[in-house]
Amino acid sequence: MGKPFTLFLLPSLLNLSIPHPSFSRYFKTITTFIEASSKNSMFVKQKLQRYDYFDNVGDAFTFFHKMIGKYPKPSIVEFNKLLGAIVRMKQYATVVSMYRLVELLGVSPDVYSFNVLINCFCQLGKIDFGFSVLGKMFKLGVEPDVVTFNTLIKGLCKQIKISQAMSLFDKMIERGLEPNIVAYNTVINLLCKNGLLEEALDLFFEMEVKDIKPNTVTYSCLIHAMCKKGMVSKAEYIVDTMRKQGIKLDVVLYSILIDALCKKGMVSKAEDVIDTMRKQGIEPNVVTYTILVDAHCKEGAVYKAKGIVHTMINQGIEPNVVTYSTLMRGMYQLGRVSIACEIWRMMLAFGPVPDLVTYSILLDGCFKNDRLEEALKIFRAMQNSGLELNIVCYNILIDGLCKAGRIEAAKELFLELSVNGLKPDVCTYVIIINGFCKGGLPDVAYQMLSMGDNDGLPNSCCYNVMIRVFLQNNYSSKAARLLTEMVSKGFSTDLWTATLFVDLILRSGRPILM
Image 1 (cartoon, rainbow, N blue to C red):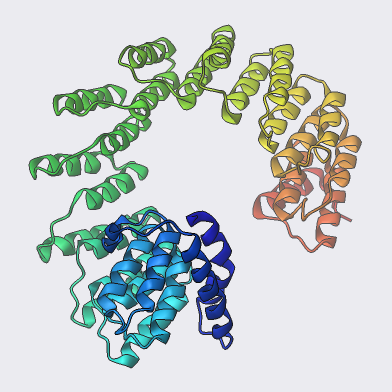
Image 2: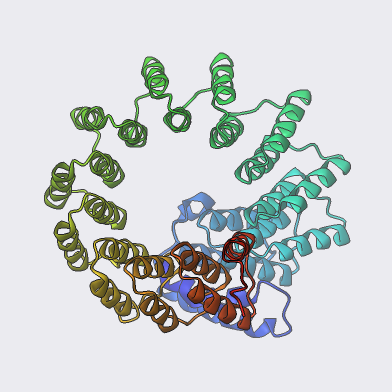
């Protein structure tokens, strides 16, 4: 009964997230439902006294109803235990509602209650309400603790409010509350994810000064950020530091490092890291192997990549759709079209089921290897696969048809987009303009552009790109006409487009815009 109960209450509970003059109406609705729920619910066993026993909201709410019916009322500690159990079920709006009911019963909240409430608001994306609760704590003389600030900082981090999170972090210290490892990790993670590695390292060194020992989470954030920035040697240094400190590394961390090494072209070193992993009893997983498959394919060593896939299978690790798609891309890059198609057929027969990325690789590979008919067969298979085709798939096909000189077929496909519920994007317009201009049909290109004029496209970016395509294909009058249209819609040229026009004027020795 837990699920229907939650669905019934959700609209009311969301309205109860803030003080409301008509609260009593919601109170009555909830109370009525509690009574009905109690009658229909299975007998609540004595085990329900253990609050972590609840596995659905219905039982928890039934028990809550029994608690509020007691006299004298249970202490806030007892209510906190129940609310904490419901938070673990991720029923945040329900907890907000229950908290309001507890408050109306005259049971005074403590710092734990407020922390639970702040957490619920943060999880619901209502960070401002979380700060309102903090204000209420100050008003009632309840002193916030480290958990209070940690929760609010985490809420700000979820909304990527970097400056506010840092400011609150500093205020926490000003109030004499020392941030713990959770607070540091939360902010370090936010900074790392947003490319602010130096600031993250400042906090990391601050932890060392304060003798707060970094854990796996701390190091993982830094390693990931360093690898994204290509700072592989520094990432390796941190991995070595972790090993020396006896901090347990896992396959995820090693895979991040292996990926960074492969992206730097250091594939043999990446394979050495895999050997090190194995010596420590950590086995590579499908992600680790797929990274290696990709690296070997990019180096043109597709048969090494194929060997890795065989190794995976022999070790009982099932290659996934990404593994096979990566191998297919590598085969296409070396012109091994028949092998790539064979992998696809094998996936259809034995799994994993090809996804849109797989099909996009197939289409692109066939066109780049002049296998037009094979590409069209694959496209028909895509249409019959039940997958919802996106604009990327159509862009690949339209581009391939244009390059193969099948302009009319490309035009028909473009016109089919709206029928299939798709809208052209910037890439679609660029492909159409480029393909038709190179095919000697600038008028048709311009006509196609006008036909797609809807939902804010073509936009400023779109116009600039298309004008450049006209100019690069020596259709200056079409470019000038498009420029006039662009300006009339309130858009302006970017530096690149303006430079091309200036170059054209200087070369021709006459104005072309008027």
